[in-house]
Length: 277
Image (cartoon, rainbow, N blue to C red):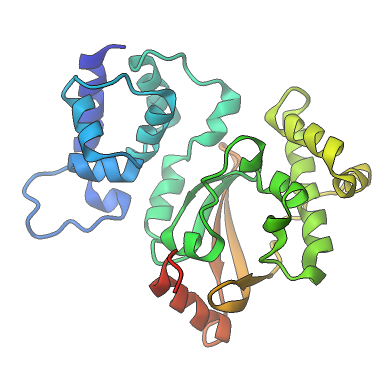
């Protein structure tokens, strides 16, 4: 690991970012451009002390997970992310792993939707980033690990994943999940992460295996979603999507028709946050 160059690279990227670039208010007391160290630490999900020690060329060797978090927090491009890994003493992540990296353009849009339930999901159904209202609405979907990172896998293997969805919608949702995964498998082929998920589901879920034999085709239309939230009850939501073809990532934004009960409940969730009443 090249501590000096790593520290210099992080400092340069931190100073180049403006608060507005990451959805933060500038505030009247900010005298210099760029982000503060504690702001980068918060955006990256680590302590301010840990990040400061990296910039000061001391402290522990950052892990690949920490470097990936810094790449997201600093809104790095893929080329910049690869350079960060090299400075940290790690090989450049393989293309298959790049599905974990949120495109900076997607992050800039997400930063401006902090009052709206929105999240970035890759083509494997793995949630990469969420706004606070999305966590309040759907729970922290970034906390999962292994195969369970995929919402497709959880839907067919974890009964809790179906709890928020009305029972009468389960069959439709199952077909949609299978179609999404079928599209990912068709694109990535054998030996891919999509293939690993498919093989695991074929071995454990008879429902998925039956749907898979039908070769379901993904529709571009995102139908209204009905959910049951433990705090506010039933909601009927619309889901607008923005697709980044280069990254195979989708920005999902959940809204409700203005003036409806569901709209009022979404506003209440924004106040409640992820904490239970």
